[in-house]
Amino acid sequence: MQNVKTMKKLTPQPKSLKHPSRLPRTKADRGTILAILGAMVIILPLLLISATIILFQIRQMNLPGVIVYDQAVGMISREDTVALIDAYWNQNRQIQLTSSQNPEEFFLLTPGELGYWVDSQATADAAYHFGRDADPFPDILSAANGNTQVIMPVLYFNEHTARQTLTAIAEDLAIPPEEAKIAYQDSSWVALPGKAGRSVNIETTLSALYNQALTILQTQSITLDVITVEPEISDLTLVLDDIETLIAQEVSFHAYDPITDEDYIWSVPMEHKQSWVKVDPETFEVRLSPVQESVQNLLDLWEDDLGPGRSWDKPPDPETLIENWAAGKTITSIIKHDPTTYRVGAGESLWSISLKLGMPMWRIMDANEGLTINNLEAGMTLTIPSKNDLLPLPVVLNKRIVINISEQRMTIDENGAVRSTHLVSTGMADSPTMAGVFQIQTHEINAYASNWDLYMPHFMGIYEAWPGFMNGIHGLPLLSNGQRLWANALGSPASYGCIILDLAAAEDLYYWAEPGVVVEITN
Image (cartoon, rainbow, N blue to C red; front, side, top):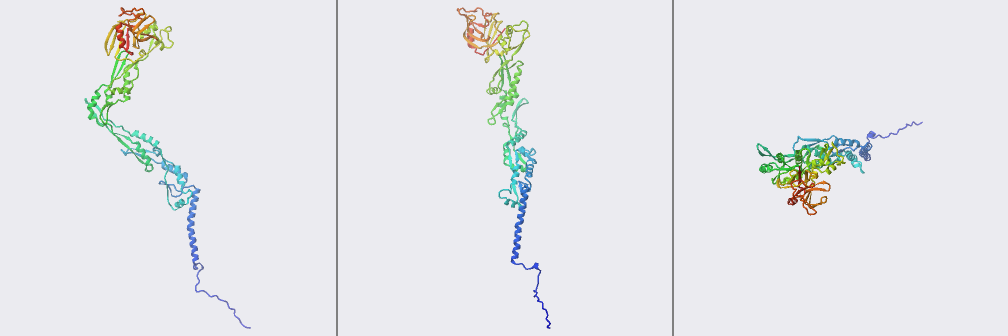
């Protein structure tokens, strides 16, 4: 039997054998790796952006890098942004308003007091909507890259509020200029120099508040435009002589009481005239320029001088008075007597009271409702009308007729002097002429009295003894049969209440005494 050996095939071994992980890479392998790395570069930012978007949307926050002017509000909710902006701009901020003339003079004010208001909601909305428009990705990508986005605050300015605040401050700071004036010192007039004042230029300060609003809010300061106000007249030395001449001139006020025939003249005190001196700053013309309030104060003082029961018939108008003074004129005011009261004594009648007080009966009855001649009783208190009620026409100054019943004489005065005197006849005892102060009211060339069938030449009515029945002054009467009455009675009472003159005197008086001339009749 043949002996056979089994043979094992050997596989040839390579010269060098490396670890499988270090097998040589092919070009295809390297491309794959680069692709993977490139994808990661793209994916990672996208993942970051995606995460930002998710957080940005879910948490309702502003994008990172959003700044409101100089205040970072990134990654803050809209609600928190509103509160932050309001506190930062509106609540926790003060603005220093400093005088342009004195840095130590300043006011600390809130923005609201100066009319400023930052709309925190609108500003927060603007910050919130960054990155939320139709194409948000550029904004989001910019934020992811660390870029900033500045949002300007939505700022409002209320000029009315600012003006109110500045006006109040201006009143506190205002110093009126002192005009040059004169003073009486050491027996002579001297000129005192004027002094400058100051005021706030509200308009220029308002303009700065509007045009520099954001800067003012940021720096929290603004200059208040305070200006110097020079007096119109700073030196009166050159016109001192003219002023002295002007002040030396009489400036007065005249009042006349037609009931008592008294004249009152008040001179304007020197200190008032001194305060009224004005000098034209261009022409240096010197004049008196009274202040209405000052003149009214003088009129009140002068009225007090009249005493109780009298006042101005028509209160003088200060403006008219000033105009007359400027023209070198003096005006006259009439003094009026107030109504009075009268207590009825035992045995008195309405007729006797009427004669005693110089007031027609019918006027007393009109002033006392329900009063008649039959129901008058002792102890009653009657209202007696003002004596001026018997002077219904404007009083004629510088003319007056005075009739004395006991002397049966008429005196005619003009300009303070006696023009003429005449014998008269007044009323008989059973038809007396009433004493009192009356006025020429009517003229009738030849009046007819039907009660007595007589004509009264040159009749001048002076008061109504009864409504529609006028007593007056006239010449010797003539009966309808041609008989002239009382020619020999002049100098004694003879009439039915009128005042009788001879024909020539009556005619002269008729044309001399115009309506309004006062007639005073005394007992």
